[in-house]
Length: 154
Image (cartoon, rainbow, N blue to C red):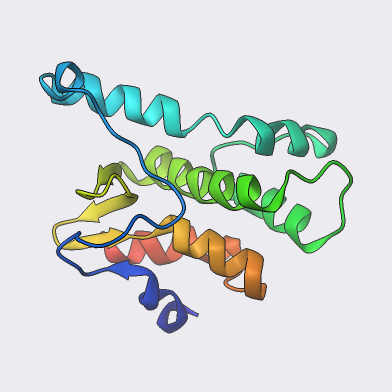
């Protein structure tokens, strides 16, 4: 499975068109990198509609178990499913939040405002593309993402 996930490594100069989502930070926020990072983690980790949808099955924790719960929801036909574009975005943001909370990773914004997860030097993971692919094709299984990202940090 890890060979499949390697296609989601971001190995670009960061130029190009925004895909699904973009975040821009004001000059005031950028002046305090730790404060900006904290705000970014808080903002991107909300995933309100996704968490509301998952509440019917006990909710989502920002852990491997949360990814397992989300995988089960996505595999089924649970009622109250958020609209596809929003589901895709919030799934990507949730995957990123789990990686941040469990691996000491961080969000990195490309010059286009596109968020990726910075795992290690020269190693960014495109969690938005993982979500897009999972919703379109049914793979990768979300339970494989955390172990894969963990292997990149070694």
